[in-house]
Figure 1 (cartoon, rainbow, N blue to C red):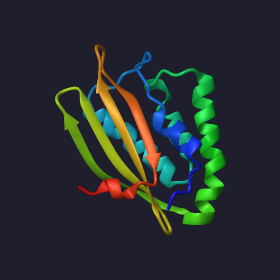
Figure 2: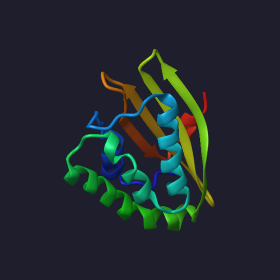
Figure 3: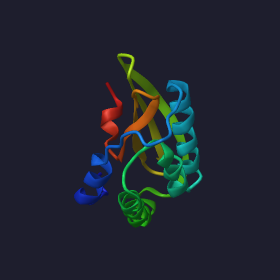
Figure 4: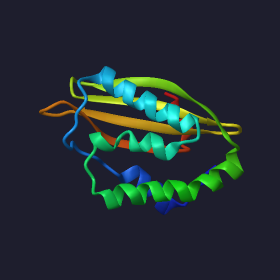
Length: 143
């Protein structure tokens, strides 16, 4: 069930982010940020949710806006195939050492889930959103 055009999916999957001026204090703040992003996504405001991440990533504004543009282009296709977004659900938190946290969620549509994965990194000055991905590879949610 591959809805996304490969180039659009690769754009979303390959965007890696590093620290800008703002950092989070710890994994609990990272979880709050991701929860807030997914609450907006669940309410139909994906752009607003992703804009919450902007202070914690550094990519040029043009790249950030291009990413949002790709999501906007995909939204009607997802809605026609999967139905409306009905909610989001936290799936799990994984840690690696003391410096990496992965938070996994699903965006629940009427007929299909989308996987959202956020990777946070503890740098010199605090925690940042290093990378995030969204895709329909739901089989990767299972061990």
